[in-house]
Amino acid sequence: MRPLSDRIAVVTGAGSGIGRALANALAAKGCHLALADVNAAGLADTAAHAARPGRRVSTHVVDVADREAMRAFAEAVVAAHGHVHLLINNAGVALDGRFEDLPLDDVEWLLGVNLCGVIHGCAFFLPHLRREREAHIVNISSLFGLIGVPENSIYCASKFAVRGFSESLWTELAGSGIGVTCVHPGGVKTNIVRSARLRDESRRAVVVSDFDRTARMTPERAAARIVAAVERGSMRLRLGPETYVGDWAKRLAPATTQRLVARIYRGVRARLDAARRAPTG
Image 1 (cartoon, helix red, strand yellow):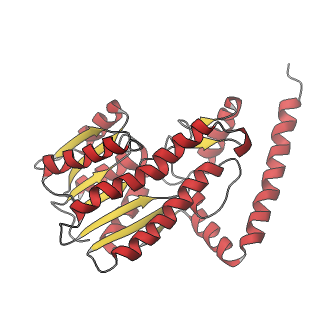
Image 2 (cartoon, rainbow, N blue to C red; image 1 turned 30 degrees about the horizontal axis):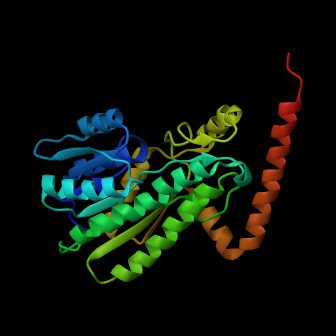
């Protein structure tokens, strides 16, 4: 979709991380912005940084899991801006723990944000996107939408679902003038792990430390590549070498790849359990 200048772009999860970087990148391209997040303070900070002379920026405190709130959000965006050309369903949360230990309330919370949030965004904005000669949808999946990772079963379920939904939607909209891009980020330096729900809270320091050690891509770099994918009309975008490795491993040897993941997981769990049992002091 070119050019992006003067287009109306909607970004959910805009209060931090990739969402905030996307707001800045799109503003630099000359977009007008409709930004949404549940965090009002983070949202206001993003809007202040993304403000550009002559560009309109509206902010909307919205829970993407709430169907009626998302319906009202779409109506508010059109009332404020008149059009919608680009929808980026970026809002996401994380949940860590073995499936059998997870409260179903936490399961429903994650699926509400990560999956229903994407579906709500597409359902309520698609009628407005259809009114434009050219428009685009970006749905954020994950490396964990390409490969099953232990103690992330529900997160993986949501991201695999976003991938399948996006591929089906792309097929339905082919030739309509509305493009769809499904994005698979790997390790991007955001706060998603710090704000995740953990079944075993004593593991948070270890989980955060591991994430900080392995996450190498900045949100700004991720946002730049997403914006470029929109301009190219790409159907699929992998962010980070780990996503290419995981993707090709699952294509070439799907069962062997999952067996390898299981073997690595057993070793990690054994070391963690041994560390817990070790005497202190």
